[in-house]
Length: 94
Picture 1 (cartoon, rainbow, N blue to C red):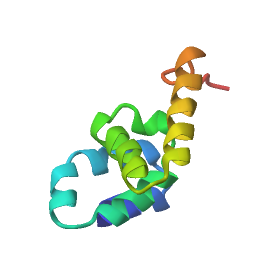
Picture 2 (spheres, rainbow, N blue to C red; picture 1 turned 30 degrees about the vertical axis):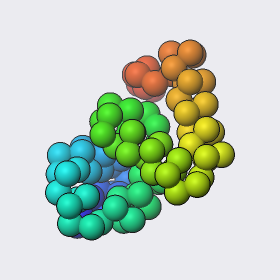
Picture 3 (cartoon, helix red, strand yellow; picture 1 turned 90 degrees about the vertical axis):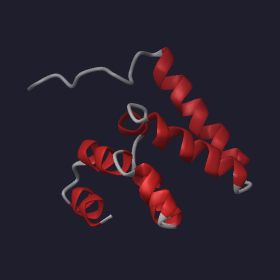
Picture 4 (spheres, helix red, strand yellow; picture 1 turned 45 degrees about the vertical axis):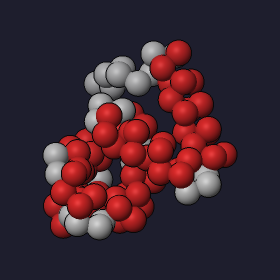
């Protein structure tokens, strides 16, 4: 969890998501779900979608926690980005 925190502090969200995804099952087994959810709330869908475990955990946790409105908005945001081909678009260099 420390590496994840450092990656967030460095604003390296791609690496943050990668750090969460690799030990995903261990994070859950260790009881760090609430910390993981707090971090996922800070992560953009674009960084999360390439890690399906993170994406589904986020959406499912929202729904289970009674945050159905948040889960719906989360999935609508994904749909919006997907339809406009904005999820995997490379940033142009200046």
